[in-house]
Image (tube, rainbow, N blue to C red; front, side):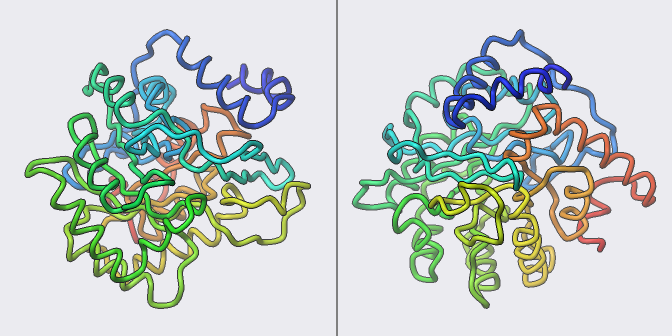
Length: 344
């Protein structure tokens, strides 16, 4: 968008978190805009849900479900809000969000800062769900004595307003949270959230980290299939640090953006290899162009999500990627996104 190119220098004079809050405030003032019409070939479905475009907004941008419809109007095929915890929490001390402009990356250690599930529930209950698919990403409060109980509570609370629910156990910014990816804890967690979701409730997705050991991909896939998980989101931010140029390179937290691309793509390929297509995959991490999205789809992703690239390219990026994907489908001779999934 031309206006973003004009405003970006001004926005970048603010620290990253203040700039983000200003962006949310500006989006809330936008007049209502209907979602765009996408090329028919981009229509796809997973877990019984229809998506007009496979390009979605990742969790983290709209933590409290304030601007989901605005983002659908800007060209996202679906939006994931959150992460939402049972109780409101302030998150970690500031500063906790850093732009690494030289690396086209972001480091965050926000710590699930949000106003709580009750506030978001009331807000999302007022939206017209016919406008598009909105998923809800749930997490645990940092001071909770029982993380698994928090996830079950989140699934129960947010199911009425969610087109799908994402169980986020892959943030590096809540101590002990990633331990829920371990074998015994994962089985207990997935059994609990499966039981918390009422019959006929929304699909359950599981968001995993890119920082996994050999054998973890097969183990997590088996657990997900055994417990009725409908899709895996691969992957969250990384705690690893490839070579970076920015002065913020040594900041603690999860790294996202361009430096995550290869790691996230490798993780996706590993999950596709062990799952053989039995479990739908959603690719996220370092996606900044139609080529990036195309590579993720051909590697096995039915859908893709982005967030960090939008910091540098603006909110029109999703529509540009969708248009680029339609051209790539046509050139490759595929009738639909579903035909291209896993075709590399």
